[in-house]
Length: 411
Ligand SMILES: *Cc1c(COP(=O)(O)O)cnc(C)c1O
Image 1 (cartoon, protein in one colour):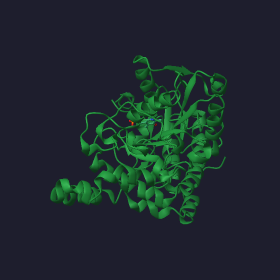
Image 2 (spheres, protein in one colour):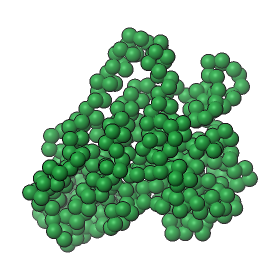
Image 3 (cartoon, rainbow, N blue to C red):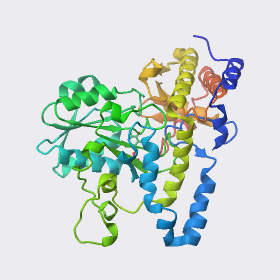
Image 4 (tube, rainbow, N blue to C red):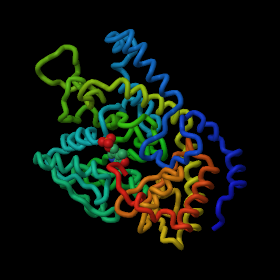
């Protein structure tokens, strides 16, 4: 395995069609940010756009902005833009709430579409909130959670299963599930499939409609660069929209919110997936991020991410294997999402030592160093420098300091 040199990296950067995207983000000079999969970077356009919504729209136009600036249409408008990134139709996606809340709506929604079935099938080690939200619904007596490892999911599908609930790109290992095959397996037993696209949207090509997916949710603050706690989105295939019901039946999902009726009547289409008032300032930031990613193009981003991640992976293994660094993601870049996971017995201290040297990745318990490849902000020279810095930290044992062992509330 040859390690990427700075000279080779310079040539690759010069030939990179996405190289100018980096300047469309505000990032500290010299920082190598390998955490765009956890909190996406700040697009340069975002502060002015949010400032405008705040000062002109909120400040001057006040409540008239709901109509005048189409605040009320923002969840659908931004949903339509996200739809183009995930292979769905514009009217199948809406932006609202967090992924966690949207999971409640769609898991309960799936149960409403499959009366008589109670089982939600997922895999152990799925993103915790996906499992926790189902456990909350199970405590209400609405369903039961069944877990089966990835290679036994198909066997665990039976006539009791209402919904197969999976995350497309695993948050830790970056393993990619075969969305069309697993969706078909669910359909073969009469179940529905719900895909969590949090680590896919804006990073990995997804085609919900071609895959036959029924339902999906995804995150706004990762590869969509929507800002901390950005609103999430949900997708319901057109064929289910008339029949699906969701229990968070707030007024914004009513068919005529401003009639102020006592009785809930669900709106048609995706509007019934709304609960309360949309967060307009947060939506303005999300829209700027989505516009930038849509402009760059997901297939282009993913092919750069694969090239970067392969070079990073080869380089880190070349310098790290003798120090106990081990690849925990699939070795084939087309079998993984846009991040890579390595295990190391001192992964936490190692992550902190890298952060102290300007290489920002994250630690995932118990022993994973997770490096996100957000290709919009990363250059080949960043990857070459990250390899050099990792080699230095491992060769000198610089990670071995009490400070680097101290755990913070957020890893
Ligand atoms: C980040 C992430 C979430 C986030 O959920 P929120 O409720 O929006 O915080 C959910 N699922 C997966 C798989 C994630 O990676």
